[in-house]
Length: 325
Image (cartoon, helix red, strand yellow):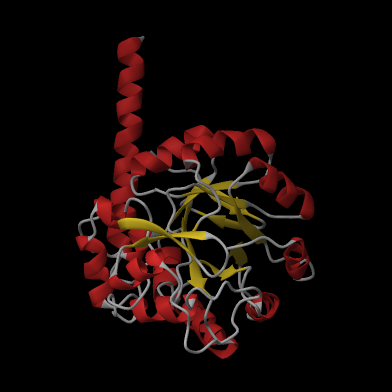
């Protein structure tokens, strides 16, 4: 099977796969460029980066690929608008915005024609996004990692959103295989976003200790904590996340990084510790199906595997059709 192209604004990805923008610093230039080189859309996780660091990562990614490069940024971040403006000034191809929703964000890309792509979890919010000028929507279900906007499965949400909007839909949450991609496209999605599979890739900027921790995770290790952002978040059970589950772990120092913070712990610092390999005191965000991943693969190997799985899935369906006929 030849997977369909994914068009967002004027940008066309040969393969309808968006690499999730995983913060803090899991998704940097090397990973984003590797995905773009395979025909997908690579995202740099801008949350927690300084403006100079973001500029550096965007320029580095551009030196590594001629493919599509975007950023992912938390709407909840205090400097959200300035980060988006910085990325646009560097010629970023698109902006994916999650962990909150802002009606004002769509105007940020208007003058430059930069596509703004919100992450939503309901048909209602998808319709609002379309009306406000979104170029596409990432539709995220309960299976996703990190901040969650719903407790409903992505497989239930996609048909509802498809019936509600005409703009491109990117399914996110629990996408691991080529069969998943085929399933979501049949449901009406135009593409998929994958986080967990790329978090545990060779090119991921996660420390080796964190990648190994991913591989050791079991279904019973996956928990949902309450983030200072004001949303639930899916993570791997670590000594730190266990403390968060039991009660507040107030930060000793506050960097004032969020527009509004619950102060039950420091989200930015705990994610940084995990990215650097401290799985004892760090917060390890993950998708629900991370325990199904048992091997660290390169981005090229991941794409090859996904395309082969998608082709096999279509062949099986065609054989079943003819047998039933």
